[in-house]
Image (cartoon, rainbow, N blue to C red; front, side, top):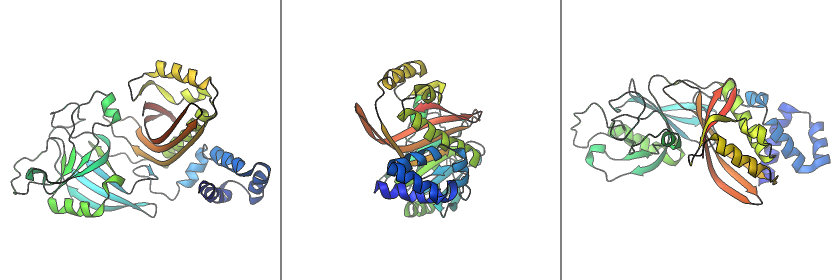
Length: 324
């Protein structure tokens, strides 16, 4: 299956990057591994991604593994739902909503604020108190970025209106609430496991293809420097303000990586199911959440699972702020 995937990408790249003769020559001299190596090299190029993204609707980011996207505004409370069809985001819902009474980012439990950021839906909840309507979708607030910012609280849901019709409050305790018939429509439309929620305060900044090209090329260059034990180039992708999921800061992280890379272990690293979302924030920095599936194999360690990065794009460079 892996070979078929490689050659599927290979055929697509032939047209854009090289002549048939060059690819056949490369294969005859080095086999499938030479083709894979060439493809990895091409995917580190911004030009490749600029060409690849030309026909894609990238307003809300880049997604290889997402079917449904919620966009929630706080200052003029609305909730929109989009599906991705034929390289284009199709709006399925656009409705008024209720949100928390406080503006800005949620900082602590009980502050009645709807958070700003990017959140996965992690459960479909039923048999709730009638106050929440027929059902609710819970989010993963606080996400890793929130936790490392010392933000607390939880129970941030997309839910309905009271079943008894008594809704005197014009705000929520931080959740996003919509009319019950519309929530039922959402429930019949989405699979929450393939959904993501982006919440923002004022207006969402649409993502440029240029920014995505830099991020995607940088992601593959970061991976290649990791694979080749090039610690200097690898660490260039990390912000001095970097914090790992366990609280380890940049200096300790860099020293740890220098010790590991000095072993010169051979590695196999494959990224798939890459999703890149703009990350709204009060400081208006050019932040993004990047998630992907990582298949990592080395003599001393292996990992197969989801990876998550929070990065800043600054002066056309990707800087990793948080990693899990």
